[in-house]
Image (cartoon, rainbow, N blue to C red; front, side, top):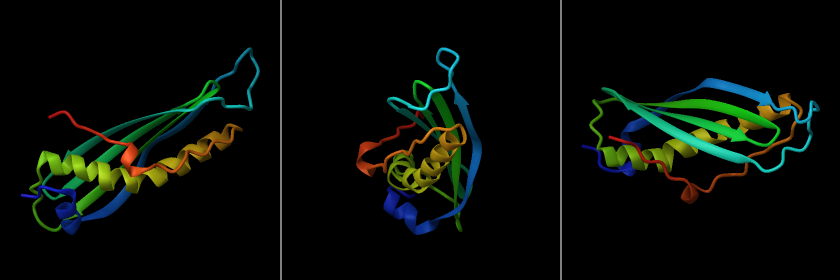
Length: 138
C-alpha cells in the first residue's frame, strides 16, 4: 500500500495532460467593452479518479474579473506498471505536492491565452506550492 506522495512518485508516471474545457466570456459594462480587468479572483477545484493502474486528477480553474471570466479544465493522467494500491492520504498528498504543480503551468498558459483572445492582458502569478491545498470527500 502506497502511503505517501514520495512512494507514489516511485511508481507513477505522468502519461498525458488533456484539456477538457477552455473558454472565455467578456462582460460589457454600460454596453462598452473594458480594457482594465480590475481585481482577479481565481477559484480552483480538483477531482481525482483512481482505477486499477491509473490515477487521474482534474482541475477546474475559474478566473474572474469585473469585465471577464475564463474557465480552464485540465486533467493529468498518471499510470503505474503495477496495480495501484494507494491510501486516501497519499492521493491527497500527491494531489497537493505533485499533480497540481504539474498541471498549473498548463492552466496559467491557457488562462493568459484566453484573456488575450478577448483583448485583455492577464498573467496569473506563479503559484507557491505551500499556498494551495486540496482535500477530497470520501
